[in-house]
Image (cartoon, rainbow, N blue to C red; front, side):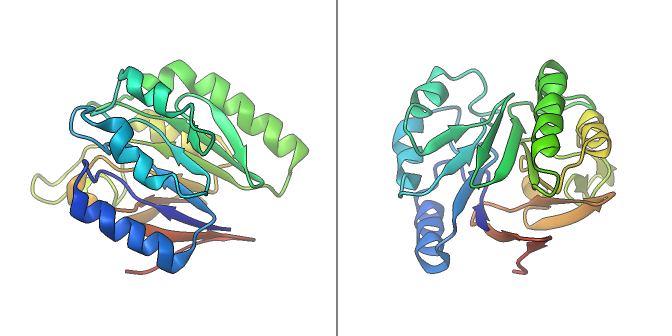
Length: 214
């Protein structure tokens, strides 16, 4: 299964054009966006409709879309699969997500939904022991290359995201939010965590997860 993940492009038309070009070239099976696809929610439907291209489009809101009603209106499109604080099986892969959030050691949206998400993972793995699980958050997990800001020499991710990954059988974690960490990847135990950047990264999920090099 080939995923094209992209994040934090903030409605930039030039970047949208590059993503669409990559979709045409790579022909991924699933599109994934972990948020901040607008500037404070402006023109959300117009921006996101670019990615209704006949493929499942899994997404969550970023801090720029947090609380926007238009997120849920857009999710009425059959291809637009909102996994904020819930989980959806897409082509045999379970996607669970927790969007929104901006700063602090704890991510409140995950605290609200972590029991539900953990139960969805447990139920899925019971029926599909070899099935793959993808966890999508806007903010990164704490303590990885995806949240370390070199200019301040600090990790700025959320510790409860890290804890959730450690406690659950997650194969891939896709995040965004920290622009300085675009196109970075790391591991939390056996889980690969990646910030795919705004122009997108190809991730293959078969017997194992592989992230394409830039």
